[in-house]
Image (cartoon, rainbow over all chains, first blue to last red; front, side, top):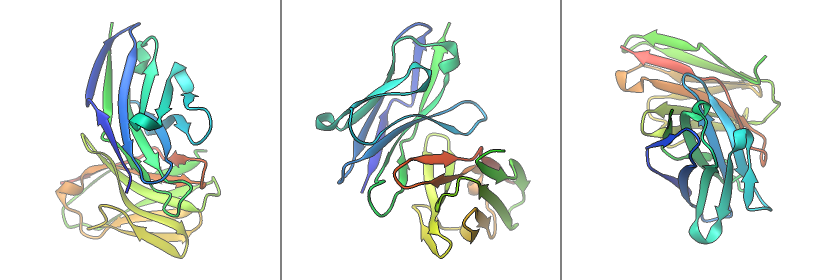
Length: 115
Length: 111
């Protein structure tokens, strides 16, 4: 079975500060990992994904994440927060190479950016 | 037009009523999913379908049913709505190995 744990349901940073949103996963097979962002009153938008290959993945809006197998982590970072980054962020894991192809989500982290 | 379209966008219904949420896609994907989102719980899988003849229960299927009318259409029904089914519902499609595309969501309120 696969699962995702997001540490910290609420994170607050100052504008211009580093953003770090934590995600740890559990998977019995090589995972595919995703970060999605949800702006207020909107659907989910894919930020970035890790499938195979390079473990440092770059996404949209200056975000990136690093797959660390030894730590079973896939933390999301951005060097300098912008007010427009305020949103809820979801980490997700999938067994896309397997039969089920289900996407399992974490409980989300709400990011607030203070001026 | 959006790749994945959900209707209605918002709905208020009374306890005990039957309601159907509809999803259609233009991605050409075989796999379709219904999730519900609740504050603090993330998104949880209700049902998923790999093709028209293949329907599978997710982790929270009780109280829900689905119909895959065509490759492009996947509807979710609440046979007798109850207040704890008040949530934001998302439909999604996937092309195996290439991730997921989500609709804009249906906000359902059961009073």
